[in-house]
Amino acid sequence: MPVETVAIIGAGMAGLAAALAFARRGIASDIFEQAPALTEVGAGLQLSPNATGILARLGVLDELEKAWTEPERIELVSGTTLRPLSHMPAGAFARHRWGAPYGVLHRSTLQRALLNAVETNPLCRLHLGSRIKDTDPRALAIQAGREPHLVIGADGVWSKTRARVSNAPVPNFSGNIAWRFAIPDVAAPSFLKKDAVTAFLGPSSHLVSYPLKETGGFNIVAIASGMNPGETWEAETTYSQRRMLLRQFLRWNRAIIAMLEEAVQPIFWPLYEVSAGRWQNGRDMVLIGDAAHAMMPFAAQGAAMAIEDAFALAAKVAGPLPLVRALSEFETERGARIARVRARGAFNRFAYHARGPLRFGRDVVLSLRPPQSLAADFDWLYGYSIPD
Image (tube, rainbow, N blue to C red):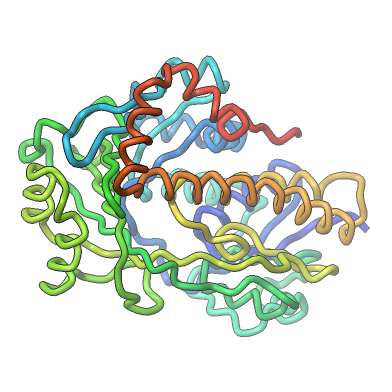
C-alpha cells in the first residue's frame, strides 16, 4: 500500500524539512509540535553545499540567500599566535565545485524560511501546542483526524518517539560545552574576518567565528570541556562557569582571552551525542536528525545531516519499495553516511585540540596544504547529492 500521509513529531529543522520533502512527492503530513509557537532560538548556523542543494530543491534557498552571508573562504588560524595556518575557498568556488552555495546565517532565518514554506503548502498541516503522549498511529489519528501510514520522530536529542523503537540510540553528555555569544560589528576585534568562517585552533579547545548579516555582527562559538547542566539546549552563564571557560583558554592569544572576558551574556550549550542504535521499528516508525544521530559539531554538519535525512527518507518512502524495506534501506544507507561524518568530526576534534608536539606537527602540515587540495578532502561531504 502506498504511503499517503505521515505524522511528524517535532517542528524543528528536521521535521519541517521532512514535511516539505514529502509534500514534494505528493504525500501529506501532520507536524506535531508541543511548543505553542515557534520562537526564534539558537544562534548562528553554517549550511554547507550538501544541505543548500537540498534546500534549493525544497524551494526555500532563495529566501535564505536574501538574508545570509556567503563567506569567501574557511580559514584555520592558530589560537595562540593568530597566524593563518591554511584556508579553503568558498563563495563562488563552492558553487562551482559542489554545485550549491556555502552560507552562514542565524538559525531563526532557516526556521522561518522552512516554516513559511510549510504554512503555504496545502499538503502540510502544522499542529502547535500538541504534546504527544502516545506516538502510536491510531492515537495520532485522533488528534490529526486521519491515521498516518508512517510516524517520523524528528523530536531531537531527547526524543520521546525513540521509546517505541527497540534498541534505539541513547543520548549521552559528551563532556564538552559550546559557549556562544555575539559581538556587534562596532565592538569586533580586527582578527575577526567579515568574509570568512574562521576556526581558531588551540590546546584542548577551539573557537569559531563568522559574520551574521541578520544581527550586524559576529557569531562566536568556543568549545571546551565543561560540566553538564542537564537537559537543556542553552543555559545562562554564571560567574564560576565563565571562570571555567577562561581557564580552558588560558594559554591562548591575549586578544582572544580579552574577547572572551568581555563577552556579553554568553550562553553555554551542553553538547550531547547519541549512541549507535536502531532508527526504525521495522514497521511504521522511523527517527531522523538528532533523534537518530545527534553528533558533536566538529564537522559543522548537524543541521545538514537532518536536512539530508528528511530528503532521503521521502525519496525512499515514495519509491517502489514496500514501506518496511524502504525504512530498512534508509537506515542502512544513512547509517553509513552518518558514520563517515562522525569519523570526520572525530578527526577534526583530534586535530583542532592537539597539544604539544602534535600541535606543532599539525600546524606544519596545514601550512603545506594548498587550498585546492584541502577542498578536495571535502568532495565526498559537500558534493553529496541524493537522487530524486
